Length: 356
Ligand SMILES: NC(=O)c1ccc[n+]([C@@H]2O[C@H](COP(=O)([O-])OP(=O)(O)OC[C@H]3O[C@@H](n4cnc5c(N)ncnc54)[C@H](O)[C@@H]3O)[C@@H](O)[C@H]2O)c1
Image 1: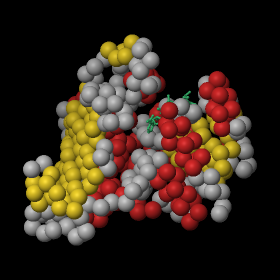
Image 2: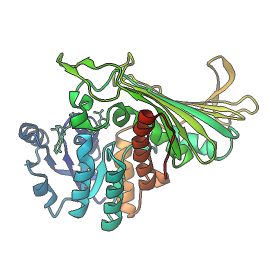
Image 3: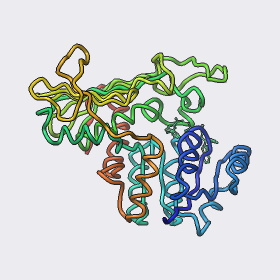
Image 4: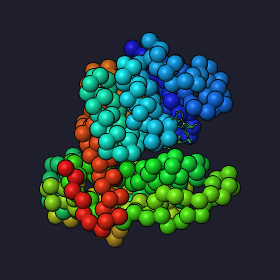
């Protein structure tokens, strides 16, 4: 089996939880050949941890002939620039969300991918079994005509890293951290978003990190948005860092309302439930849900949030194509960044904003 030589830029929380962990489980597919972090201590300790060279300068890592793919897990505003530099150096990229913090940068990343022909996997990743199955059910008309959806993603905030709350360092607040996920899933289910409106605010300025340090937040932590599609579908998205739940037990759900049924996607319990009053759902277990007896627990394949990303990337890289099933589609990913940018504008002006 061909192995991909891979490296990581930004050796913090998600690099460890997701990437180093997944690479160490997928040794038949990936070979970690180096790490980079702008903090020299973090760079050298991570290099020691994984017994690979640490590169204090990104350009030295990118100059490695044998490097095939760079994973970008730095602070949000640097993602686009690092990913473009990597593609220009002939490397493929996996970019953590948000892959850009402006529509301009998002388009520059897309252009770099087109110009260089490199595989650019810009997260969020949507091809998890509950979303794929929900999309199949919607596309096959099994819940009838869909009029609306509502999505919610909330917890107390990424208190492991106060920079997330600092406008100078992060550009965007809860929208970059949590709001982007439901927006991405809704765009996977319904296509490119055509208009946005809503409210974006900072509710809790005084915060305390997990280490017990007090700090002041300068980014939004409470968002309620309305998204619209050409088809007439309207969805609400709520996202905040003001809810009594931690990062690992967050409130994360998407409900889709159709004329013949309702889909409930609960990402905390990893369940997909369909209310179907007129027809039984084949292969699904009948249950009572939210007081509705005609509900069905749909059997979905087991999945792993972290491994699935690297497996999908590997599959696409080996096939010389893009991520399967329209996952991480660059045009849609650019549209998501545009929607977030327009949402700030909509909140500031009080007007609905169209996305061209
Ligand atoms: N932590 C999570 O659960 C999680 C989940 C999904 C996505 N992400 C995304 O991953 C990114 C990193 O988040 P995190 O929680 O790991 O943060 P973190 O603070 O734990 O780690 C970030 C690391 O990147 C380094 N860094 C920052 N800017 C850099 C630059 N320009 N060049 C080189 N190194 C740089 C920092 O020194 C730090 O070691 C964020 O954009 C976040 O949205 C995080």
